[in-house]
Length: 172
Image (cartoon, rainbow, N blue to C red):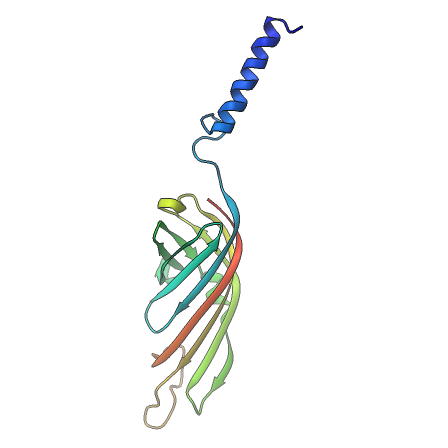
């Protein structure tokens, strides 16, 4: 038989379980944190905006404003349900030329690195985590006076395709 003290403790415990399960207790303090694997698919070209599709933890699409913030080290991802920032500094620091054809004035660049996600708005408020991204950038340049640009990194391409694929564990 449970005494009055036992009944009070049982009622308090039941109320705490109910509050936690219903999301109204102190333990949950608002919405529950969701986490899981997020997948990124991105394509772009000569402009400074690339098209993004995300699947996994959430499904959404939108535009990546390339090198928009922090002196080019952070991209602003604007999707239909909110936005967030992607710190691409490490990805940019690991870019290497994997192919080059001086006769055709072309270069292919590649990089793989972790990209930190943060500063979410809307449905992505509180986003944090890392997505490992592989970036491939193929560019061709116009010949001037019969020669290719001396430094393709500072020349403006006449044709360019950028693709990025990535996945990683993210929480909201």
